[in-house]
Image (tube, rainbow, N blue to C red; front, side, top):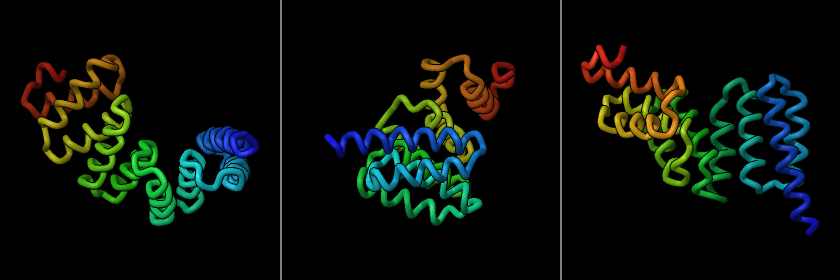
Amino acid sequence: TDRLIGDARAIVLAAKGQGELMSGRAREAADLIREAVVLAPTASYVLLAKAKLQGVESGGDWNSVRTILNDILELDPNYAPALSLLGDIELQGLNSKGAEEAYTKALATDASRLEDRYKRGLVRLQEENLKGAEEDAAYLLQRAPKTPGTQYLNGILLLKQGKIKDAV
């Protein structure tokens, strides 16, 4: 029971830390996330927060973030949020193939991840994989038709298909 309470507290601290990180308060985030890591050093969610913090603190040293992601994926190879962050890192390094693979793995674990489907669709467009991009756009048009990302992806796809009137 004590371990469950510690893990739950660590997850709450990690969530708060990520909120602080997103608000630009890295120092406050660091304190919360480091405390979470002490409480639950092998919890995937906590380690993901640590990876995001590391990305901010290192000024974009993706190698150090990759190390943490590798630790997470060793513990839980199908942890979609870690796979998604790995995809983002691959994009930063201009490795579109690696990014597509990471997003595809994340979606295989949790098909409802709309942001990953959007990002994978953009990567597929970049790779000129119009059939794959069309699959992602169709999925998004069914699930989130009015979101700007869905409309953007679909519009670019239609342009690449030569359907200019529809794209407009």
